[in-house]
Amino acid sequence: MTIASGLVGCPWWVDDAGLDVAADPLAGKQSADVVVVGGGFTGLWTVLALREREPGLDVALVEADFCGSGPSGRNGGFLHGYWSSLGTAVSLFGAERALELARAGDRIIPGVRAFLEARGADAWLHEGGLLEVSAAPAQDAVVEHGADVARTVGVPDEAIALSRDDVFARCASPVFRNGVLFRDGATMHPGRLVRALRDAAVDAGVRVYEQSPITHIEASPSPAWRGDTPPAGGTSVAPPASTAPRVRSARGSIRADAVVMATNAWMTGWRPVANRVTNMGSWVVLTEPAPDALEALGWTGHEAIVDGRTFLHYFRTTDDGRVLMGAGAGLIGFGGRVDDRFFSDASTQRRAEAGLRRLLPGLANVKVERTWGGPIDVSADRLPFFGSRGRIHFGVGYTGNGVGPSWLGGQILASVALGREDDWTALPLSGRRPRPLPPEPFRYVGGRAIRAATLACEDAAEAGRQEPRLAAAVASIPRLLGIPLGTR
Image 1 (cartoon, rainbow, N blue to C red):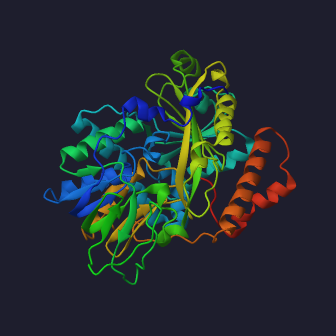
Image 2 (image 1 turned 90 degrees about the horizontal axis):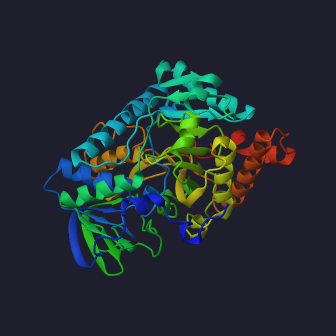
Image 3 (image 1 turned 60 degrees about the vertical axis):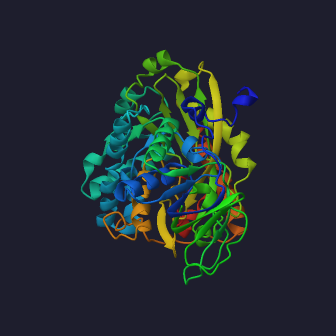
């Protein structure tokens, strides 16, 4: 793959939406009722929910770079809730609570649609469903499991099993063997959604500060809060005499009654959550416009598609006829650090294009025009969790599915910050503690070995070769220990 160096690492969504630094940095000593740290989807939905519920509330948002510069401007643009994760949710919460979560997720797409319509904004929202396909015999059972779980808990219409011919009618790839269609699924332009959210926040009276990395959080000690490294990385937290936390950047600070941390993969080194979440890379390639090739494939229904791999491929079309192909198989972080490796991962970039060429051979002559990647936050059980440490509240662990669930997260965090107990805080994602991950360096060393072994086994299966014995043994360790793996 040959791509101009200037087009590597720069998200096309960000350029197309015109995202950039637009607000002054935080400066001087200030105060607010609530300060939200992080200008991605979770932070932006949270500030809007706060202002909607309490119009007189003084709300500030502090972003290290510009709103949407992190995963919210780098993702694949899949919008859905939890019907496709029903099996995981049932294993964690039981059938009744899992269905409660999935039905709450049904409010996501209508909520985003209503927001865009109210703003008069076009973020390319299309409800074509989420299609999971098997692209190798070893993936058949994984794909069929989604329909089996939905049928078992009494909601068969949420996951419709598709034959090879059914899948071919939606996207004519000779590689696809069968599939399952989840009604709950849409695609959208994440950069344009971030832009609309940021503009709405400013219009609602939220004070937005960009280019303001947080260096210090001052908070009074409590049984649940003992002075830890802030999620943005950097210095330790020192408890002052005051009970109200103060968020500091290099040039200013804000003291608030409540602080909401919404920094996604940059939160994975923060001690209150560090043993339950880690980060890993995800990478995408984006083709040039090729509407005629999409017509030839019959892929015109805006389906969001994923394959049945553990470290899955995810792919979708755009309004101008491009195809985005992502590989959720990137590097694993050490100790929660976010460094340059996540933004210059040549091996995962090659995997993403290899996935494009193998899964969609009809696009063999379509050029890749742009490629980029970044870190995602991966929880120990693959679902996010929301909680509090004193007056500091957080949400983290989206595990690659954050565009839609961040809408739910904004509702949960707004309720938590306001001290309310309601339907949002009653959801099973709120107040829970996922199982802990192994400590470092075992997490990093073991994670790398298991990732490499799993990829080797899945590559062999797709090529029709026998799995390497040693790799198969190493790849089986998480299953034997009951630890979920990948970004599914």
